[in-house]
Length: 136
Image (cartoon, rainbow, N blue to C red; front, side):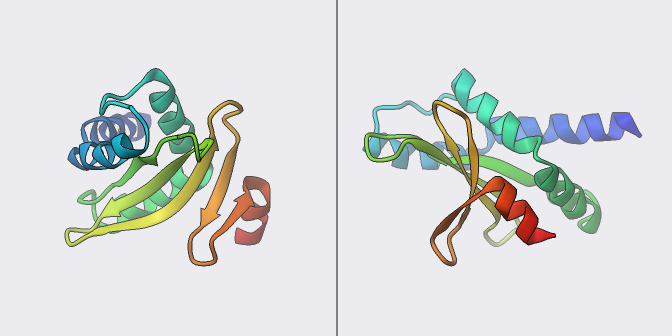
C-alpha cells in the first residue's frame, strides 16, 4: 500500500514539473518579473510544501479514487513574487478534460514561507489555521 502512495506522489511530482501549462504561466510571469520558465529550488520547495498539506493530500486521494486513477491534482505556481507582490500564488487544480478546475488557492510568502489560503470568491486572504477551522 505504501508503494502505491509513493508512486502516486512520484507521478504527481513528475506531472507538476513537466506540466505543459507551466510554461504558459511562466510567460505571463515574465511580463511582471524577469524570471525564466525553469523551476528553481525555492519553487520546488514551495510546491513540495503545498503538496504535503493534509487538505491537498486528501483531495488528491479523493480525485484519484473517484476518477479511478484517470485524473490527478496538479500544483502550479500561478504567479511569482514581483515588486508589487511579496508572495507566490499557488493553484492546486485538476484537468477535468475540458478545463482546469481550481480546488485550492494559496499564497506562500517568499521570505517566511508562511502559507495563507486565498478565497477568490470573496477576494479574501485567510490565515491557514482559520481556514482549517472554518472547513471543520
